[in-house]
Image (cartoon, helix red, strand yellow):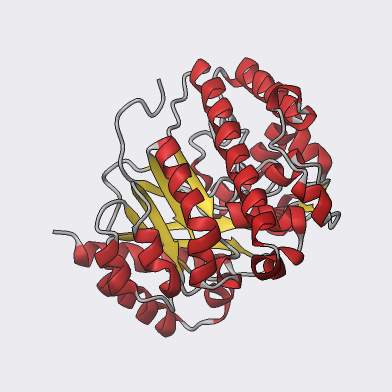
Length: 368
């Protein structure tokens, strides 16, 4: 069974055109491990893939598109494991990336708007306050979107013999925002009981949905046991409000799965580091370059740390600036992943190859 051995460390994983997620580590990662990922527009411009509704709902079409994408990546970067595709002609992870980051909101009735050259987003059809007050976690047994997901998994297993990959369950705040909109932040002060109710419903759905997905994957020989929470919007709330409304649910999720990865985007994580350190079994944590990296290393000595390096920095910084940043990261934060996600069309291929060489050189200098 895939991933049957115990693991206690997660690393960054960016499937072709998918938002970044996490996967089990192997235990032999380099000191400074790069993970590269490109936006849907990059692939759209490179090989003409349409990332509209069909890409997300038709696994046969998606497999054909992934073959084109994998071939292009292998042609441009033959020595880099971008997308972790072992055989470009027969990709087996047909799950990671579908529905973008909007599946939980979809389960609560928020439609997805698909884009031909971008990740899909949730429609701005937010629930009003009264609807949120009446909200209950959806019955996944009778949920049409969840049934569609299960149908895709059946097709994937028939065609590939397994069901590899991960769904992006997001974080409690991210999905609560997609459901309620900007009023969510005002209601943390004005209607705290409403917010508590909404985030509790969302956390329950995340846990139940992932547990059902993992049970189905185990039937196909894939043993996923971790969960990633994406706290992309955490800098929109104070540390006090994170502690009041969200921390208990991140802990609850961790306790439900045994291992958790905490994604903080490329933001400054300093206001939340002590709270994150109180979450059990953190096997991965990431943050931006402005964070207190030495403190983060001391708070999270186990698991895998990662630095989210922005696509603007990848594109715009000089080679000397990039080298200085990578050496600082290695010195203050390593060993760690360096996540070069969301690289946009127009970024020279040579810049990707240059970053990979720098990571190899710095890793070699830091290996025992």
